[in-house]
Length: 433
Ligand code: SF4
Ligand code: SF4
Image 1 (spheres, rainbow, N blue to C red):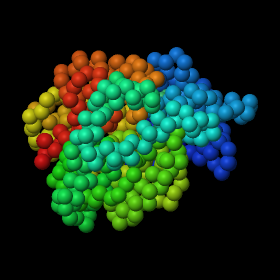
Image 2: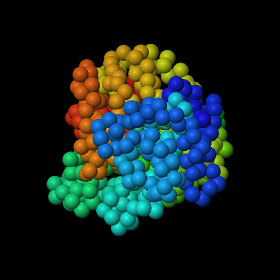
Image 3: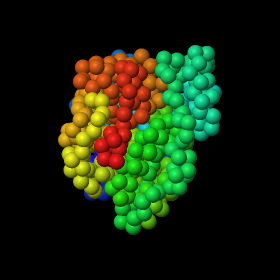
Image 4: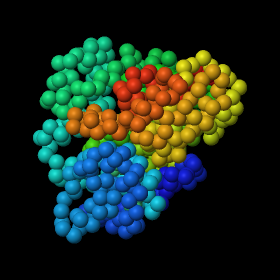
């Protein structure tokens, strides 16, 4: 089992390559036996599951993984529909002392459920397909950002989305930036630094491109200040929302494109960096668990979260310690997917030495939004119940702004507290550039 499932692991993908458990082998049918056999029913995974904690109807990760397989085999049943209530937060992976590849099982079972059992004309399927393919909508919407932002903020649009599609009207649709990151990058003329030795390929994902280009720009300025040559290749969505909604064919297409593009760059000496911890999680763990395109393992082994990368290869701690900044104090939330990569403490440890700002960890709870999960009308209340603990801790922290690496956790933090939410790269930019 890979260290990516080991909560205690702080090793990097460069140190030890990801080795996915071959849960499904060559068999055409889903076969969860190799993973299921390791389960000794300790229920640690169930007690770590944020959905099971607030939703009595959700049977929990042990059922979704090992037990589902046994049921399915014995009684020749399909996948239980409760698999669609798993938010894919992946906290259960970290909780299992027996290295049962729970999220791999869930992702595959969910894919099978959607493929074989879900009505493709149902509102749920259509809504989930739309949410999973956010990048396609964003590409259209960001062509006329002001008009789209205005239209999406109207009460009538929200009501329509809720009644017709089942997308909650409780949340504010994230605004599109006036200029996408890629357009800014092209206008700027691309990289300002050339280097033979220090080269990174940026996986920005859809959200940093269409909604928060300030995060991507901050990354560019910080990395260039350390002498890195940056390349921004063509790319598709990481697949994170597709995995979570069981849209594995969509995810496969996106992953295939990304692996082909980025593995060529790895061959040319580039490392891959992400500013979203769910994107880095997808490239590092979900791709090799679910797909076997040529280059998948190389991409997984060369992918890093951006701050993590600088902490490994530069004296980031030293640079930060010598700097000071005027910045609001921050309540920091570690995304579940950062936790899975052993990155949950890095922002707090890094900024501890930075004068002028206090960054306070608000604890281990899940934010509750889990990407598209909290956007579903029927999941909104569950999502907010899960988020309550984080909201409370944020309000008790000294900062009145927040910080996180995950764009949807940021949405939930803002939604639950009204705080402005920053990305660690933005604070690094302010401190170092
Ligand atoms: S991925 Fe998260 S929501 Fe799904 S079963 Fe595991 S802990 Fe629960
Ligand atoms: S934590 Fe692992 S061993 Fe324990 S019940 Fe869950 S899957 Fe089984």
